[in-house]
Amino acid sequence: MTAKATLFNKAEYSRTQNIPAPPVLSPVPSFHMKEPVELRDLCALQGFPTPTPPWQRGNSQVGDREQSPITEGKDRVCSGWTERKGRSPNRSTTQSWSAMDTLAHLLQLLVLLLTLPLHLMALLGCWQPLCKTYFPYLMAMLTAKSNRKMESKKRELFGQIEGLMGDSRMVALLDLGCGTGANFQFYPPGCRITCLDPNPHFEKFLTKSMAENRHLQYERFVVAPGEDMKQLADGSMDVVVGTLVLCSVQSPRRVLQEVQRVLRPGGVFFFWEHVAEPRGSWAFLWQQVLEPTWKHIGDGCCLTRETWKDLENAQFSELQMERQPPTFNWLPTGPHIMGKAVK
Image (tube, rainbow, N blue to C red; front, side, top):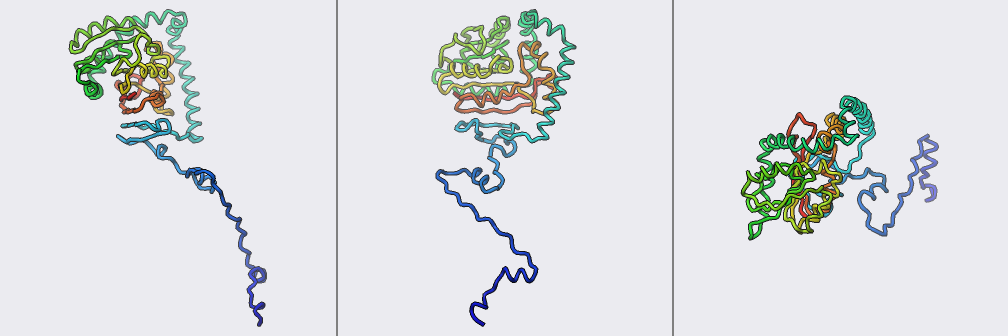
């Protein structure tokens, strides 16, 4: 037998033995990368599942220090925070949200009909002056109850102000949306207080709070909205405090810009705000239903604001926030966030 005859013809053998020929494999493409390619892009080219970034893997854990696309380059600490960042809802979730939104609009219409006189008064311009008059009395009543429930947390939050005092043992503090002076008792001695609120009817309650808190030094009461604090100079404040303020302003973004303007470099903004319930929950649905009417009752208070997003988008060098349960379960104001932001 010659050498040529000994050659094994695989195709001929497969045909005579009725064995199917092996599939023809496509050549593996080669890629010439002129620039570095991220892992997610390389996986997409090869047909593999795209890996999930760390900030999209589940919920933030208590006390975790993390960075998200929004806060990249910033120091952010979230405690007890359950927000999912960057993950798009799937189709079934979107359909569920749409159905709940439709139901919310129908219930909203029912509530509007039941409270029609209130909305007619607001439309005619009769309600707002009345609200500005009675609202301070309502806040004075709720403030006393709220402070009893949140005393330990407020002392923990505002106790940090003492660490910002220099050798002079004094600190310039702006109480933004001061209301009745609900936070005065929690400020440490040595604070020079400037009060700001758009409602002049709060001045009577402020005078009473000032008399009860002699450990503080009071500068003045400025009647102005948080979006326009032109009466305060740039960099004139060491500390700005805002509690339950960003829910009722016209533009949280502009207010935060003004806060940064009046703060000195390294100054701190302490905040405590109620925010929207998780989207898609029944609690969020009722917030949607009640919000148009609640705005009139609460002097512009919005129930469905995601205030943590405004804080994350603001140009603070450091942001720390902590999630807290609702102060009053019988109110639709939902969960709270508390923390501080450093200019």
